[in-house]
Image 1 (cartoon, chains in turn purple, cyan):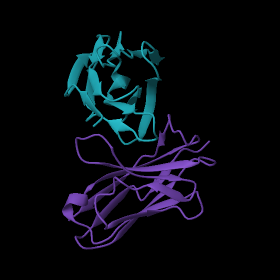
Image 2 (tube, rainbow over the protein chains, first blue to last red):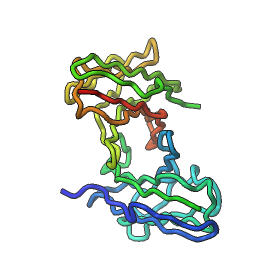
Image 3 (cartoon, helix red, strand yellow):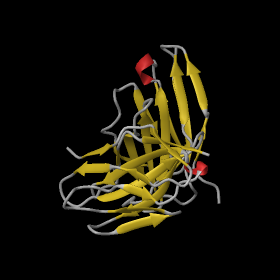
Image 4 (cartoon, rainbow over the protein chains, first blue to last red):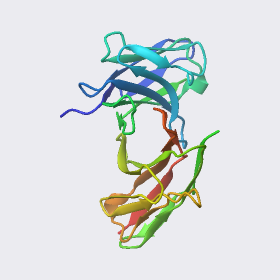
Length: 114
Length: 111
């Protein structure tokens, strides 16, 4: 079956622009996660959804970052007024089990802010 | 707080050499431990996992043993191939949904 997909794969934004990154999780997966991976670093947790409920957004770095999953499937990570420090790969992951021992990752969206 | 420390890369080996990538962790309680692999242009893939002390995870010739006494989860493979070239991430889950990743170790295998 299809894995986790993300779009776009690459995004270049001018500083100050808003961007929206999409994640299509594996069908039937209850849990969805967003991570930020800076160059040469491991992924860092941003936020977690169980179905449509955002249960944890403690990793979002500022109020410019906003995530939603309105119907409990597709999710969008929005970054307003992008800054250069937002340049990173944004990874989405999903899991069937809310306990989430195994997460399945998408290929990521590489965001470059110029 | 919880954390994962991996050996820095890149690690460069010849084909058929023995591989060890060190991973140690700090955590309260009894986390689950994972190795993920990231091939160029692809997402992270779960390589193996261990959920309790002394468990050995294994997959595709790779293995790692959960050592509580040394808080380690070193990745090993007896004979690497060029196709194993990738970035390897050690991670822990402290019993909730969050993963905490190490910084990754790049492996290059030369023919």
